[in-house]
Length: 130
Image 1: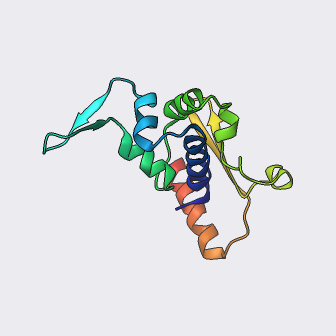
Image 2 (image 1 turned 60 degrees about the vertical axis):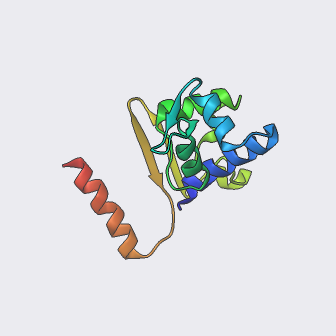
């Protein structure tokens, strides 16, 4: 679980509790009318597993879904951005920032880490640029 996904998961979980919703209620609100049926014939709201994955910090939604989450939860999309849970002093220089940049995402890392980890990040960036 990384801090970016866990921040978003914490925010979603907090908002669900505030509304008295469970993950199925939230999935129904995100994708109204969509239902999936499993092999045993049981119906469930579409995307319920995705919601669980976000809350548990195992994955994060794509930009369009993130905008829909903000709409359903009646939040400003900035409230869902990584670092939204940081203290005000930490917001100016967060350890990790991921934000929309046109059709892509801007990623900034400002974190002290071992050289091996820093080199792994550099290798990912270099491979992406090729």
